[in-house]
Length: 125
Image (cartoon, rainbow, N blue to C red; front, side, top):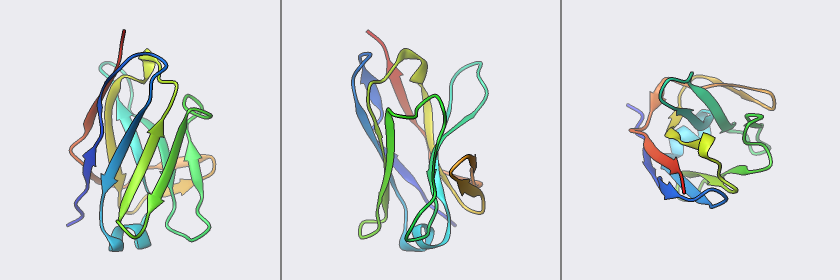
């Protein structure tokens, strides 16, 4: 059973920053791609970013977040981070960390089927 625990959501003004954390395990970071997708009310689920497990990882960003979001991992602490800068109201959503058998490449992300509980990000003035 893969367990993922997310931290770091909240309310921020447009232009602000937040960092999401996803605590996992050594097995997960060594075996699977891990990443983030988001779900906003009335909108389709969107894969935001992912990082593959290799030492020279593939990294994906959705066009909507390129240049503003950055994914990173700390293998010593089994944690993946999503640094979100210059946040916009359209970034408002529940963000989920996801892992498991899936696919992560420079231009494509298909999340695995193990998700965290989700964390709300609200961008509003």
